[in-house]
Length: 303
Image 1 (cartoon, rainbow, N blue to C red):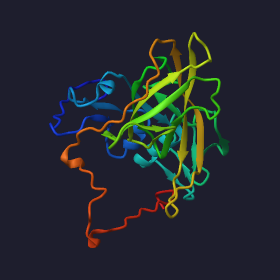
Image 2 (image 1 turned 180 degrees about the horizontal axis):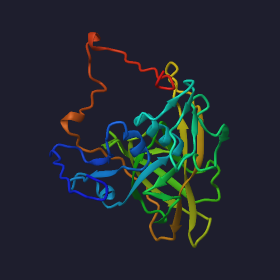
Image 3 (image 1 turned 90 degrees about the vertical axis):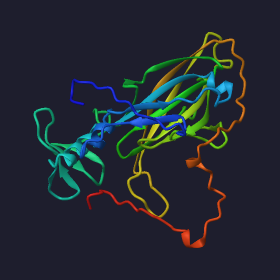
Image 4 (image 1 turned 120 degrees about the vertical axis):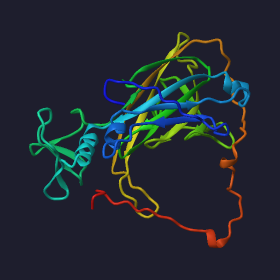
């Protein structure tokens, strides 16, 4: 599909395919990371067959939230790598390309920062990471108090993972509850499961039952903030991934309006799973078929 044009694409879904939340993005060779990480991605929803879910899940109002962790510094570096315009001096000091829009940027692979004409370009100058929701910066979402909603989260990012959460000290905000229904397009064996943070890596999805209550804050409604924490963990050391960089900021403002809905807990449920998703956790596997697979990652990846 050329720029400025459109096309209609039909994807046949097998009848035994599990319903769920999925991701699409461009896959042009050498540009995938920069394009998808720059916001060129979206959600594909495979709808649940009628009657396959409990009624309290079927009746939930849905909100699809496509999250883009925009990090201009990383996008610029990946564009340079993809188009082979990266000028190498020392391997840890990599000069990006020149063009009329950007000056001579220099990428410091050790500190993870950009230098512009030998002066450090730090946070709050347009290159620190932010999560955009459906292309919007800190949008407002209006909900009814105590009403359950189904949030479908989809994330694309470059090199960083994201955790979604409320403020740790949120006594002055609406009390919001997260109940995990599915991850990466697959329902949990037993759902929902209450969580306090939603963990997402690039390309992953999460279906969450979500509600907020004001309590005694305000009879006219209240607000809350859903934050994100972006984590850069570029190196694998044994079974650990040390955090090299962490950034927390506001992602979405939630306005909770008064409602007559009662605060009711969600019941546990399980769905019928297709044969290709058989539960093999208790399967007896011959010892000769036991293997250990490790992928230690060093950074920068070009070493």
